[in-house]
Image 1 (cartoon, helix red, strand yellow):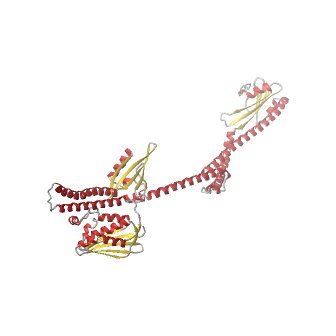
Image 2: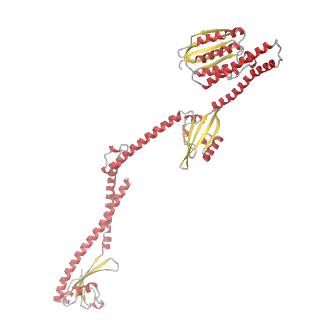
Image 3: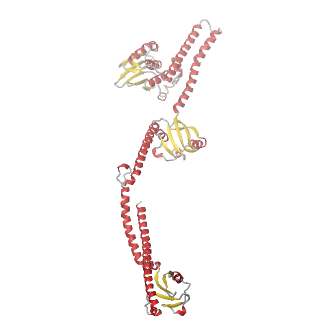
Length: 552
């Protein structure tokens, strides 16, 4: 801006200077020309008066250094000329000033030389005898005067340009300095030119509008980041060139990337072929989906193209962890198969015994044994169905009433219930430790202790022992069920909580187990946000500990 102001001022100054030089030169030239012409007319009147009185003798005795005098008769013939011989001169009757003087008494004209560097002024007057006396003088043209004054004019122009440049530089700095000091962050606080007041008010209004929009955008950005940051699902936003413009923490963790990947191509972060194909399909059809494994977890990817006004603006990629869902589906399939098998086995035994009785094949003496077998298998079937129902209830996660429950009281109740089974097996039961009051579902806590003790009795040696120990602190309560039975091999300890899993299937069948007891324990502990641990040595016994937090 300073340069533009400087150039403008200098240009205006030079233009005005040159214009003034030409105008002044023209005015002065015109002025002095008029003066010279007036003087010439005065000289002509004097010469005409003297010529009328003295005749040609007067003209011959004059000094003609400055002027040229020509005397012609009424026919245009030259009677006298101060600068030429008469016989060399043409008839002057056609000269403008002569013709005008013959008609009106006086005449004037101006004629340029062939070089245009000089012009001659003519003044003529008619004498009493009808002849015409003409006087003329030569003078330089305005162009010659300008060229003659070129050197001083050049000096003046140079000095004027230098002075104008200096003044323009100072003036432009003084003009621009207040503009450079404007505080555009607070436009209304500026004390600058009054002419800038409307502009500053508009800037202030725009600042307020921009600040309002920025605050709104920041709020929306914060909301978006909070939402996407707390999402368990991986979210990636791409532009129309498949470059990453936003990625949430879950997606960063999924792809093993960091925030520096923003602005990079997605395929530089995930180079898998299925992702490449999905991007291509999304660009073509608008949507795509596929499943892929990351870090031993299965993810479902959903891709959707973003279109506005028939133009592709980007793409949204959403990835869900479906590992648990797939595992649940797998477990349901296995559970269904196992349930079918477990239900089919006692039913087939019952049907076989009943068919033998119905056909009269069973002897009268063997009838009680077959009926007892039917009752035993039916009882096993009822227990199995009850366990399945309890597991289904735990899977559904229905609301169950919580109350303050003493684990020691529950342990004593379980011992009373299992006392007969323990005597038959020759196993002793013992409860020791603290009262262990926690806030929980009484029925589920009873299932936990009952199933752990029932397994400890079934898989124990004769004359073995089962110890229920309850220990409590300010923040947690722990109950452990320990036996000195057959124990569990290390490779099977992680599987014993799976449904229908049995380490020794033949022994389990003899003991009447359904294979669901520890699975019920696992789900009941999970319902209380507890932790379960197994410590077992083959041939020496097993201890299963359950830890509950006092904070619900």
